[in-house]
Image 1 (cartoon, rainbow over the protein chains, first blue to last red):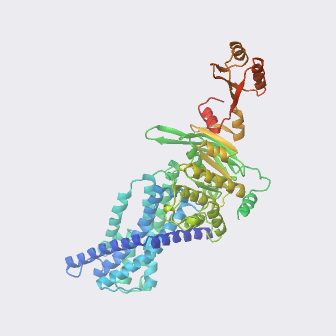
Image 2 (cartoon, rainbow over the protein chains, first blue to last red):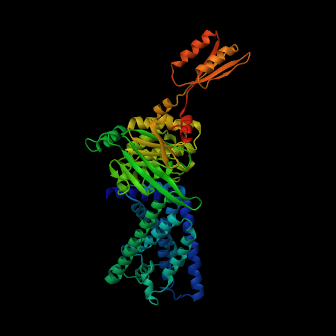
Image 3 (cartoon, rainbow over the protein chains, first blue to last red):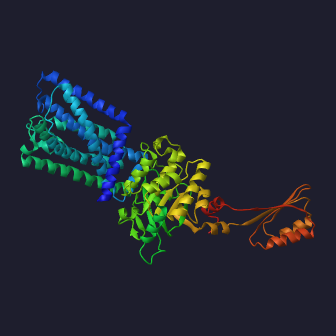
Length: 259
Length: 337
């Protein structure tokens, strides 16, 4: 286990170095996220005359957007890292880790969630300041919920990353899926309850209750929390299993190196 | 630190198997389905062993199957059939255990992260192998010194010259401290000077650490310089597996070229042609030459005696020394064996 922690610590360090040394890229990402948010938020406000019927109103948009940006980090970092490493050739190096490629990509996801979480918390504060809507920032309640939600979406990232390694030109699908994921946090669950089986939707729903309605995680019914845990495990584990299948195909066909 | 590595890899071999091979490959086969060329037998029944501490060269023209062979050994490509034993561990059934004994520098890859510094790359690849960079700090420093990367230790890899990047890639393979190292075309694309420098560094590292190395190259000089034994591979098959010195010896076709300061009398030419098969005599008033290949070194004196009888004045005697490049070409073209 300690070897795995060594690996993950190494990956986290790399992630932090990238974020700090290439801070301009970090800032531009934040800026783009922010501009996109401003358009959505004030657009929704203008159309609905102040009280949009989506999710939890304007506050709901902030929460949903925060969840979506976290999902982008979990989903895109994993898949895009794999694409990039396959292109440059470092994928073959990490595929030779005695700890296995699976643990390496789980490390990607974990370090992205940690570094992304720090950066996006800043964005969250900025969004609240700009809109003047201050949400319930109960860290003890928010942290486990956002972590579970992002880990689940990481499973989708594993699948897309595996696809990219085997089928190569999948970047356009990656991009389209980002927008599809946005829909998952916008559609109201009370009207379409079956949507809760989709990734992100249920986590977003629970986070709305905490951040908008001001509840604590201890006030959320255990069955609801249990469903979040179950869907996270299902998506993450399912995603990893599919990823491992693609890894097997790639090793069989010799695709880890040729891009 | 390097001395520690040596004892560690020696100890980890099971008792009584000190000379058992670090790597044993048998009947390796890999066939690809290519859209353009149909079925391609990239590797077609390759078998060989590498003894501990040996530096084995894998030589072959482009597309001969060197890289596919190495990637199969690195578990990056799963062979169709055959077996791979790395320190006795089945590389196909237990790839993760097998790769824990090896590190590789692969051809055509960056191998290192451009956005990390030299030191950060070494630390990262140590962690990828499950070795804490802190615990490995001494080796990391040693490698930075050995590969003369001190001045750029805190520079991003992307800012380094091609040669420096390649040295870093090799250092990142050494940082894992594995008993077996695979270097696929380590000097490809480097200028002559840097290639020499990297070769010298590799020699020193091998001498100090006692690591076993499988090195592929299409550059004969590199193999001749670093390896004791060489496998020549062509069309996915091993055509030769021998010590470099034996191969050179074999082809020491003792070729001599003598120049004479006076013309060769026809009688001498006749006697020479009768005595030495394949001899070439060119004669003109100012410059005469005799070219002959002697398989038996003793016949050289016969030749000289004959020249003395005719009072021929010898200007110069040259002997052509073969290099591995010629040997390689002859073998690949099927001129021998």
